[in-house]
Length: 171
Length: 171
DNA sequence: AATGAAATCGACCAGCA
DNA sequence: TGCTGGTCGATTTCATT
Image (spheres, chains in turn purple, cyan, yellow, orange):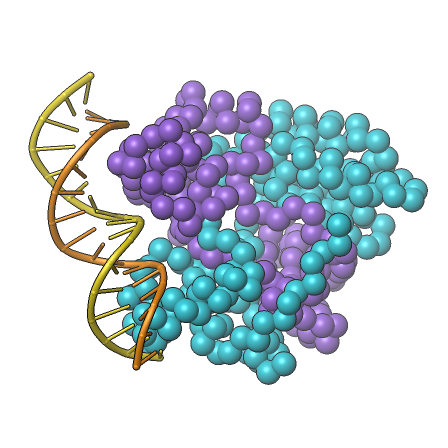
């Protein structure tokens, strides 16, 4: 199935303010949100519904500290594969299914896949690499330890410049 | 500032079931959660509070579709820096502050930093690379386009194997 | 971990700009 | 189409067992 085309919603500055607020913390009640944003409860409620209906907000979810689960190791692995037609898709799925993998990207160029994994110990890392190389079509892997996670990917609006935000509003 | 040591919480299978549920979707009310988990409303409420107090759940936040904001480009950039004492820390902070960057990792080995960015067009990518190379101490950058994002990093418990989960429970 | 009462919240509506 | 202010039922919260 092809990715569904985005039904283009047009957002205004108020929508962006709401998004910035709830991507940071969605535990506040309507009254607090309304006060912070200078709107009425109903307006916030109305716009939040719209943003969810339009799939601008895709979900509301709890963020869990990986360290609380003993996931002390963070590893980035570059995976290169043999270049035959149709291979990549199946390999990508298999990488996605491996225990411990957190993010999987299919990339242009000579690398093919970048996989980011969270693990508890070196044994799990060994197992993971073994599983990767045993996937049919995988050529080579190169792993790098992450010493420090300086910025996590859990914000979207907050990372955008004024120019980028302006592009959203006026088209 | 050093990272705060985790005050070790011990979690049981019920806690893990709750975490798996709310990291996927936190919009359900207590009654639904209780029914799905086979617990009473109060028990779920009690445990959720405990998990938040213990910072196992760090936040509850809305997930926003980057495509809804025109962020069609996803790029992975490897940044290498000159190796002088104390340089890396400041550079990491500056990378973190750049518009468009979504994730920043400080890594072992010859690469030094891996940066993942979301952008709207090539001009923004050019600007970003320019800003990176103009950071004092940055040596070289190499960027790769992501053609397909197969797995996003927004789940933690769901990515863990039975073995990994067992490690959490019995220590 | 369950109960029940009190406090709070979110959904909805009629009316309005 | 987007908003207001108010109402009501649903929900959370909390003290108690």
